[in-house]
Amino acid sequence: MKIIYAYKIKIISIIILFISLILVKCQRTKDSVIVEVDFSKKISNVKSMSGFLHYDNIKALQNDIIALQPKYWRIGWSYKSVDDIDYLRSFGVTPILVISDMYGYPGKKNNKEWSHPLYTGRLKTVINTEYQKFNNKVIYDIWNEPFHQGGFGDFDTEEYYKIFKKAHDIIRSSPGGDKALITGPSFDRYNEKEMEGFLKFCNTNNVRVDILSWHELRDGEYYKDFNKDMKRLRTEILPRYPKVGVKKIILNEIINQYSQFSPSEVLQVFKYLEDNNIDGACKACWAESDGVFNCNNSINGLLDKKGKPRSVWWAYKIYNQSTKGTRVKDITNYDQTSVFASYDDKGEYIILNNNSGNRIVNAKVKLKNLFSLYKKDKNLDLVVYEIPNTLELPLENMIFNQKQKIIVNKNTTTINIPSMNPKTVYYLSISK
Image 1 (cartoon, rainbow, N blue to C red):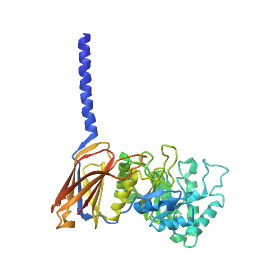
Image 2 (image 1 turned 180 degrees about the horizontal axis):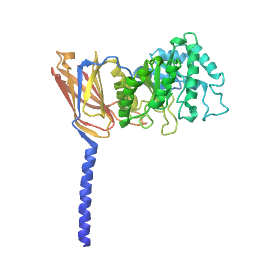
Image 3 (image 1 turned 30 degrees about the vertical axis):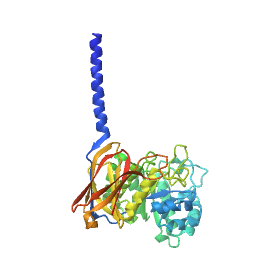
Image 4 (image 1 turned 90 degrees about the vertical axis):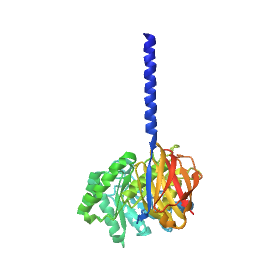
């Protein structure tokens, strides 16, 4: 009986192992991903999601600013001189100045030793001082994370509304203040009830908010909810409050601490933001493995402690290039594969991002109407690079994957990619 029992156990173990291997294989491999890029369908008015938060010495980052060309840079306690603002603007960067950083925070909710912005003259003094320096060279961000965060105030609802209105009225009553750009509410997350309450108050009390902002730290499957939230916000909520005057939506902190070093996660977030017509974004800063927050000259973790680029830096670099050329439309049959395709007078470029945990095999990239850009030139050079997730380790250059000749057909030219690693970005460059 013991021999029969042991034999049965062995057979069951083999069956379980076999089933496990099949399940693991199914979970880790995705077959036949198809991407279509149509070079005849241009995307107009592409808005860059490249933007950052704080710094130590902005002028030391000149080469990185040129390479990454951020659209916005959110600052407050970190700015060192008035010249910094003009320096950023000289590169086409719009600074966002956080008024509450300049004011200071209570450290805990309802700290009695703190100069409360509603009951003292400190808020007016701070705003007048900053507005005299910058006038309308910056976007004024009234208060950072006013709800749920004890260190920043954790105000009651009506209390925060009154603080926002007080700051708004001070700015608007300043010379030229009617043309100043004001953003808010800078909530720590998107909550539809809280957002609508804020908009309703502003609409009723003649508070004009030029740019709507909050901190969007969702990723993965949660971005499906983001899509739903943005659809309701634009089609149902904002139209109810026209007097608020919202012209843009800028997410002034994006990318959570778990995704901060991942090139594939960053690009997946950018895709969701672009698809929802977000006007701009700034990367949040978080603690690294040594416990030090990267709200410094690491550009929120894009550079290591020695100023060397990490893999996430390269993701920002190739993304920036895609916003400067002519962007074209793409379609993919796998929602974990995001694509940014563009071209300029030097060639065509495709960012192919495998943000899944699966190894993709037999991927096909179908290039439609590429012939229209070349016509007489039928043989082109294709070079493929990889950007793996090196986390906090530096990555000196993108990793060479392959080089080949491709033949341009009149209708569709197909590129086969036999294997794509999980959480890895692939950069395809095509030229004569």
